[in-house]
Image (spheres, rainbow, N blue to C red):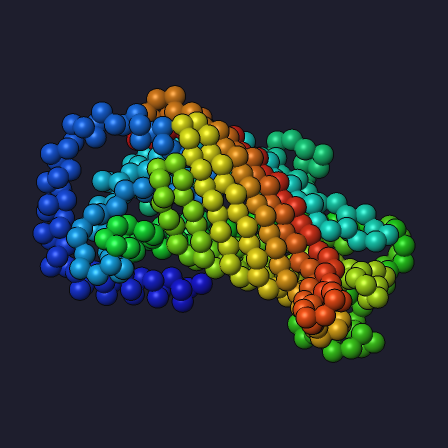
Length: 414
């Protein structure tokens, strides 16, 4: 991820150096044109607010672009400096963007998040739900940022607070800058703005507790995995014994943001996903439900997000499809190695969120969001001979995870 970020920054610097002379005249005419139209833009402030949208931990790119004339029909251009884009193309579509484009941002919100993983045979699986209040303060375009989270309700308040401590320990200062950004590059097609580079990173942390209902064997993560089942250092657990583990979801996205209309946008590109959790393999003739493994899940492929905004409403639907890897860490064995070679591990994800928001004044906003994510790993085998009448394709489910998120809050910014 650091390599990708440095590569994009290098492209930015090179492009800026090549176009520095042109930028002086372009920015001069750009400022002049914006000065001459300042009165009309003031009249359109309400319309700009009405075009705002909401998405938790995500920001939408500006629907405005630097409209220079280009000789080539398709090229990548540096659309002014990012500083200019912040002030001449401000967005009020998301609280993160408001932090980055406002001198002061202050918010209070209620947050709920729950995770429902695939169950384990003859075991009870519980996960800690988050119910917490979050307070945020951002100063000088998010250069100074403070936040405080506290749990106040739930079936197991001690577990919630433990989870908040884990979230705080794993949090990085740079995450708030990379949660979702649109880089200051414009790809033009036939002299018209077409897309910009889109990058996002997200983490989700959970605690799961597995209570065995019968005698089982737990094969934990080891520094050096074993190659065969008999030599693995497994732990014998009895009915009633518990396995408590942390699960960290990591999500990366790199692609393009396309603005078709002020109310319709899309993201398209590549994704990578990784997380870990306790898992038992029960597929086809590979019944290993007497064993519980620390397991790593990885996926990569293509993603697309479709985003629709209206005056008070935001809708976002996304799909991911690609290859996957399910690794039983203690055995140092992938599920692919335990089945016929014709099978391969695939990954599919659907996510959707619905947001409602209302600007009480120019500076005060009330907003809410509900989001659902469905993540699925499965084994797939394609038809070996499409010319015959026998369809021998097959698909077996390996694992699924559901994540539900709810957010409601009020913010003040200027």
